[in-house]
Length: 217
Image (cartoon, rainbow, N blue to C red):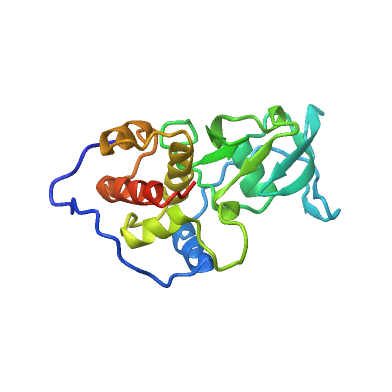
């Protein structure tokens, strides 16, 4: 992650906000969707409801059982489908953003079995039995409840356009759980795979440090 940029506030002040979980997700989702779907077949959640349907043209597909945000899904997909496309286009979870689609920006960061991964570089077919957490499932409990790091991003004003924010938050949660928050320099190093074109790096570090102090893992 880049170091402090000229003109940015270096203070770690903590404010307050009444923004709800729904409002936060809506704010950080408005960056829009970038098309890029590989063919995929029928996706069904644990209730038996169809999530999406398409036919793999060459017959090279597999059936996958994966848990996403606490819900088990049995999905038949083209073997080339990325985890990112599975989440966005088949499981209707657009919070995970498609940025570079090459593993360079971090906008698609999610947790797989508790570890940070770039969803755009991860083949969904390799995740049999895995547990995936996206920004939509980060805060358990009531609909309007925020995860401590989501709340810290609001209080520290750590986003502008919001497009990279879901990936920043998921990476920050991983960073905290991995114990890489001993200093601002350590946070910057371990968050360096997440790019913010708006230049909110100082405030992002503030937010991660605040959530770490409050036990926000």
